[in-house]
Length: 310
Ligand code: KG4
Image 1 (spheres, rainbow, N blue to C red):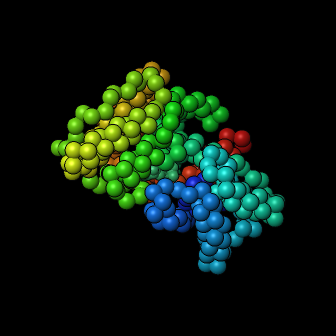
Image 2: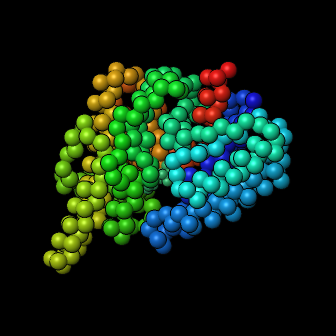
Image 3: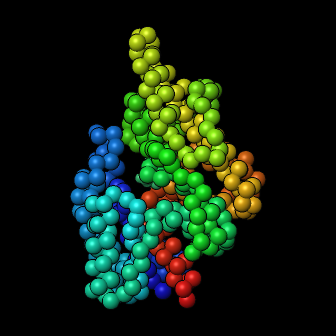
């Protein structure tokens, strides 16, 4: 069985091929560099870049004879959630392949695909598990009892965690995206207790932390003091990771689940990877290139759905 999967939800244009449960191809072009001057994604530019990049990727795969569309049995694409213009590019290509080659089209939820990305090239899926997805657009905790029984335990009230990393990075004068930049300058010796602890039962909220940083920056400016960039960045990163650990520990006990998966761009954070070892049950995290947006996870979830229906 061969699946072609297409991912264009945000700023990464990606295509993957899965054959007999193995990811044999996983290609991506990111338009991230076009957004550094804006400090964030511009949806109109992202959609236009997808339209250019998707042709580059598919032509490249066809020219190098890496795929023959005639041999493909299914086409899967990330249909939600995402930027409307970006989603349309993936949908149009997927619908065209499905129509032209007369093969079934499978719509995949991008966030749920992240929940399964830790199993790719790793081990078989085993239910039930809890999944924490923290990316530029999402911060959610899911209870996954099986492929058709997925409950959101906790979600974001305002900004997503990756978005908070990016906005705080910008406030501190760091390059876009702020997540990896804050991670690079993190210094555990500079961590201070600046931010209020959040109630574990409440949904995730990161906008208050951002406001606190704005007011501290204004205070330092008024006093003509240098902004302690490393201290603020490190304190934020440490506070955010404490919150993720606390949530997972709490809900793992409540639901008595013996497996956790993590995913989304923030899962490449080095402190998160280090601290997650404190949780005393198996934790699966995706291989490095599968933490951020990718099409392999779309193909993988599509194949889980097909297996479930067989
Ligand atoms: O999953 P992803 O590629 O897709 C979007 O949601 O766009 O996640 C991107 C997010 C960005 O906000 C980025 O700053 C964050 O993941 N990120 C990180 C790290 N690497 C990427 N956040 C914290 N630490 C990192 N090392």
